[in-house]
Length: 144
Image (cartoon, rainbow, N blue to C red; front, side, top):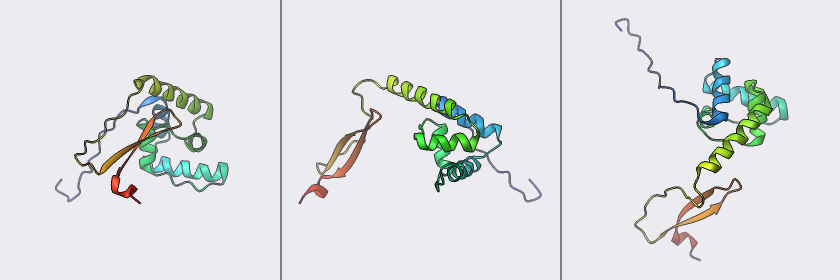
């Protein structure tokens, strides 16, 4: 542009993942909220509903829209902050958890990085949701 203003590039929007992501994305569009606005509304709802100081940020809202299932406590605040019926949000979370369980092959594990060193170990940790988390650490840190 010749008047010195720059055009701000917008990132292409990716589609929401799962029923929870769809509900949250629909609510943010309906309320004309940015991710930052949504996070602020959810944090304010946490204060109003439970007297809790929550510190959710735009990146957390983005993660929920793209497949991460919020914890039950956070769902109350999301529902209140984004004007989503809590029952609908809870049902969506259950449906999404069921989908995730069904889509993961039994005994499957995520691909881990390849380590060429004998001093690195990987420790599998079972999660409450049926998944497995991995801790990667140096073997020397375990020596006494």
